[in-house]
Length: 249
Image (cartoon, rainbow, N blue to C red; front, side, top):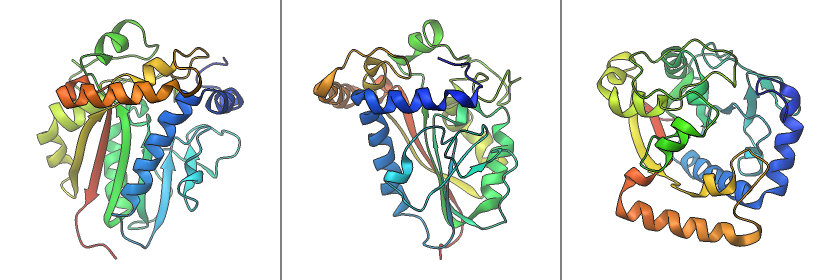
């Protein structure tokens, strides 16, 4: 596969999403959650996806404006999450799939989100979670940096995709929740839910291999449900929603 920070890898990612049913099923699960969350947002304003890459959220939310920090083929706009080119009170929703932990200054992003969202608008994201299963994967197998002991939210980035801290969502929304409330008091944490303990890893993620050929991804979904009933700490990813204070339109 091409270098992580090469927008030319978009075609390879599109083929993976087309050919790997288990991976596509994970994306569909996330996108269905996004579409459901949109129903809780005000009616007025733009729907934005950050870090769209080669995804297919438009199949679920036709009006979404797709964007990425890299100029992937087919996206609507190139957007830096820390300096978004949108007026105040203009976005009804911001969606992100495995993007938050790549933003080298998430405090700047959160301030921008607070500025751009309409009252009642939401940031809805799915990101990595250091659970009982995923922590050893992130530490010893996964290719991205992972530092749950980082004292700062920011990190020196080697590139828009290669730079990361896989523990960042947990740090900001769980460990440092009081700091979050002080930094962006107009954004309220409305949802924090670990999910998907095994399905993404068994699908092989964005690698070419998979342990779930054909329709066997249904087995992984069944196992995910059982593990989460035992404890949310089995989760490998997070659903997070932030709501801007004030009444929606």
